[in-house]
Length: 310
Image 1 (cartoon, rainbow, N blue to C red):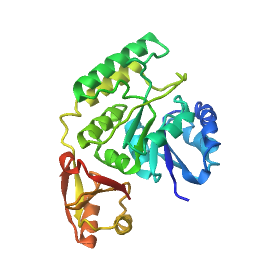
Image 2: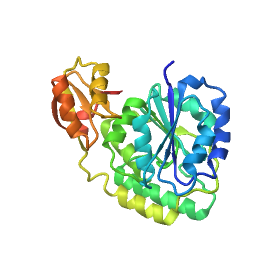
Image 3: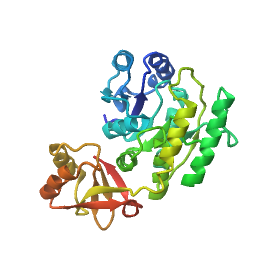
Image 4: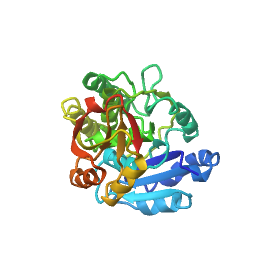
């Protein structure tokens, strides 16, 4: 039976909150076939016992996978890694504390039948009310700047729960640069530039204590990262292939070249194998084996294509 949903859980110093998060997830787990669910926990270079606790809490699941960054790189880097490993038809990123009620996960899967990206939204009448006035103030100010710099209309870009179709998730991960919390902003910006269908989903949530987010310092870092989004040149190496190239053949050759987390971008003119920015050398071997050509691509060329994860 194929995997229908991959849950990607980034975790940084979450040893004390993983068990409680799992308890919130359990009611959803009781409703799904274990063979159709994949859980990927990415430890983002924690300094506590996060990886050991993750194995204790999630290790009994049928399709649980664990990976650890060698150092703390940021939430965006952790999500990029987890998405690259995901194999489910749909991917949902969700915080380790499960603050977004996991019983709503079936709603994400339903929405993903028609939309490439389904970001959870905690905003009611345009506002998110946190447990403190300071955090609410920073949140509203940051969202104003997000809308100013990226021209998105979304009132909640930082909700930790987001759903993706797998092909689009892989593409956004390959194109993105940002390693920190502004990764969410960049993903939404890229989705808009690619013309992907985006359908926000109103979620219920609980403000769980113990978050590692530091409102002042992290808000500044997000602002600095966000300012670079519109000015970046988003270019990736690709292998241009014939339109009738089959995914199974490309996947085999890419695996031999030790390339992972890739996506095919189909159009009537050609098929592009989109590579990571550091994968050009491996791409040369793939191009030679499949009689393709290695070059670079832009967002404009990728817009409007059909995406298929390998």
